[in-house]
Image (cartoon, rainbow, N blue to C red; front, side, top):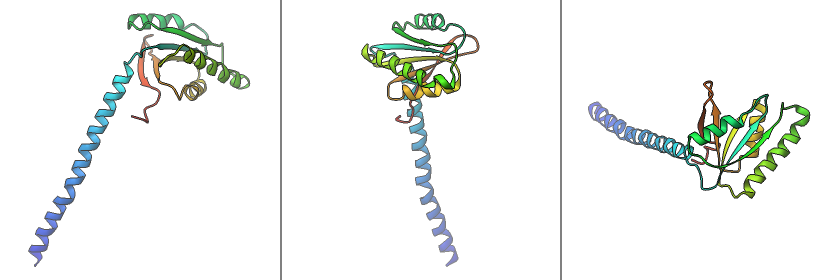
Length: 158
């Protein structure tokens, strides 16, 4: 009797482990597919792309962005917003300016925004919220002074 229960227990254990292993394989394939989609979106230029520069610091990022775009054969219009600093008192003005910038990009008929940002984290959060409903690709300035695409702003839909 116990031998029969032991064999039955082994068979049930194997039968239960099959869906678990299949689920792990399925999740692995989905994650791999998701990463491929993000990578393909990262390098998709768009049919009517626009580069949006937001500079909230002392200095100039426009020349760096132009060099990056030219070096990567990305010919597109550039829209720019710059300010010396971001203050709590001027936060609503900053939001209004970003919305105007987004509206100008939409007036040009752009289908993809390439966002270059320099400034404090609070400004980046606000810029992400303003541009959240559009196809945006984010670029990061590395320590060596070169830009790198970090992919789309939204990854939840993939």
